[in-house]
Length: 445
Image (cartoon, rainbow, N blue to C red; front, side):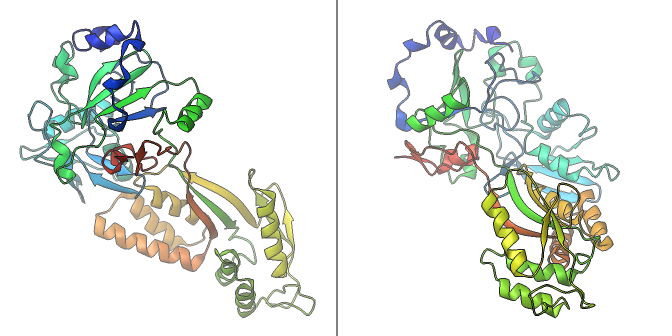
């Protein structure tokens, strides 16, 4: 549905296209209105759910108009039930059970047929076959050859579920009136979209009977980062998507070279890079691993010969103070550190992943790529192929134990990176990077 096709539904909005200034600010009380920006940067052209790239909030993973089966929470890293009640990984595939309380805004129950239609409409390659049962259950076969369990899990968190009859609704005003989310399209302008809370939202049962706090949500278009930053500072804008990527700082060991082939040697270095560095403990552990110091403070190998210099490659962007700190720690331990730009004994890297249900597996896979442990590689292959939840938990515990024992890298910082943090000038308890959860946590000042 292009913007011109919304005339029967959005007549007041189309009048607003002529002059947005005719709207009264009192129409949207500040204590009831959440102002958003940068969730969509492109001009407002279509709100058609069947379009390949509709404007916010109709597209992937908005959850405000059309909901997903699960909500991935960046703050906790967990998939929380939304339209789906349960998900079970079985030997034949993923079994889904819908929440029987989930309903469209016209009161009709959301069905397994709606889910199958929506998943195949938006990604038939990932969902070539779905078995639908009358009792609200679905079976999604998993291909062992493609190892696509984790990709399927991700898609279940971002693909919006549409009514199976939406194609026949497309030419009438009901195409946007039948939705499942906590908000409805209220008005559309050239530079902003106004949403109004659906006070009959079925999902209050998931929130102890409470509706989301804001009565209105207004998303505006901005000219660029500077315009957004200024609006945040002045309190005109309450929240942006932010960046919920997780970034780790690793000191990777080249485990194919001596002395880093020795796991005891690698483990001995860990105390030197703990949050409270303990160089004395690291030195003692190195000595216990048969790498003592001589009388001049030079570190020796097990044969009693001075260790060669250790090469280190440092990715761009690290501050000089951090580089100097690493250099000083190795020097105190009796090593000579030599910076290089090629393959090295040590690699200081900043490793970033988008927060998703499979982030822990991706992180472990990255670290184990630097390990020489064939058993760990076999376990990782099993996890990536997808196994039932109890077995996966057991395999992940074993993989983490292997990482601790093998120490293919030192993790010396771990932080959730956020940009464009909320101003919290008019709303408190905003959860950065998590709009849906924030709608129930926030309260006006």
